[in-house]
Image 1 (cartoon, rainbow, N blue to C red):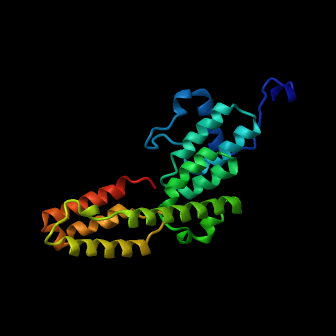
Image 2 (tube, rainbow, N blue to C red):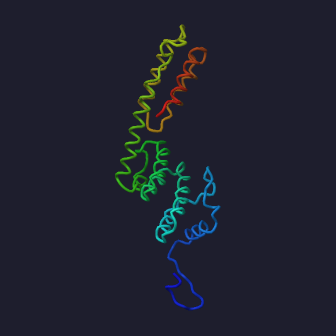
Image 3 (cartoon, rainbow, N blue to C red):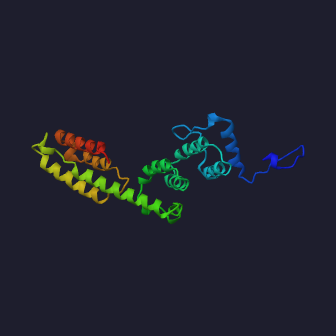
Length: 221
């Protein structure tokens, strides 16, 4: 760049870039130890700076390694800002980062996001992918919930309260089924039965409910 300029002794190069982004970029280039954020996000580049940094890497044809570094920093923001990370990663074609961010987008239904938040998603295909993911997750959670039996094949059935406890389990499962969304922890929802007096006061019924809740917890979704 200097070669294209004048030959005066005191040459300066003016870059029309955000100063904060340039400062971080130079640090990444000259201090390699700062490139990797901690597992808990410590030392991560602030999310608002990342779009400009990705733009600089592309504009000045910097290394692919540096782009991967920025992608790692972007990923650390997914738990706290999943929609922003998903949107930026999708825009940049960072499929792995976008896919990882979707795990944190299950926490609330899509209709609870504001119109302004949804507008950050770059295209309708990316939004549709989230809709499909949520629908699949919801259907799978409902399958897992209804497939779990209390005292299957009467295994360790409580002869005194077993039928009544089964009825309580089914009623609770049907209630949870009707309120499931993609991020529902169905095992946690069903575990509230353990506090019911009829379950808590009977050792067999309590153990049967504990086993069923844990089976729900470990089933693949």
